[in-house]
Image (cartoon, rainbow, N blue to C red; front, side):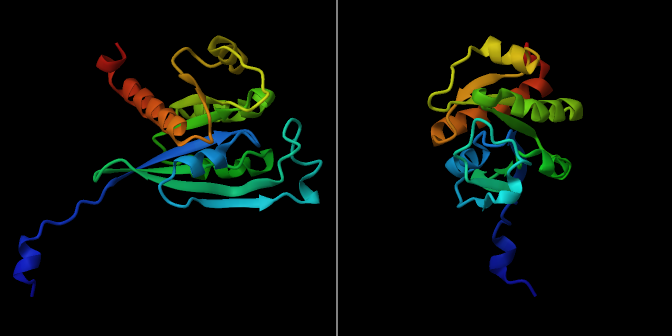
Amino acid sequence: MASADSETRPQEAIPQAVKIIIAGGFGAGKTTLVASVSEITPLSTEEVMTEASYGVDDIGGVEHKTTTTVALDFGRITINDDVVLYLFGTPGQDRFWFMWDELAEGALGAVVLADTRRLDTCFHAVDFFERRGVPFVVAVNRFEGSTVYREEEVRQALDVSVDVPIILADARERGSCKEVLVELVTHVIRGRDPVMSG
């Protein structure tokens, strides 16, 4: 029999889970972004690169990189009592692309991290989300010593429509990462609400 306390105590609402994908090429900063913005210690499947990856993974431009994500990165951000964001970072190498379909299932939207030193490495991510109709933003991750390009130049190089937001970001800075996520959610809302986009 239920106690009087349990009958009068309001049931705690279960927050709505919102799934966001963080994608991009190998070495673009996906693991760093998830770690920077997550309120929990992120789950990471970062492993030390072995000789087996040489000649298989394209490390041109990121030769200093010694680790790689082999499954996914996972982080969480509680917006309020009603909404929790779950971040899933994809592996960047070609040989792990088969996992993307599973990771993207049910996602609200995606962030495509672009590294202007190797812009071609995010072509697959852009194409993947365009073909599946998943709303996304492009976040140009600022790496020291990399060439600075204007938004129009990045848009043209990636061949994305004017509707796709392109923003500068620093995956190492929590505030910058939060701005990227706010831009993504705003973009999704605009796409669903014709009044807001007008």
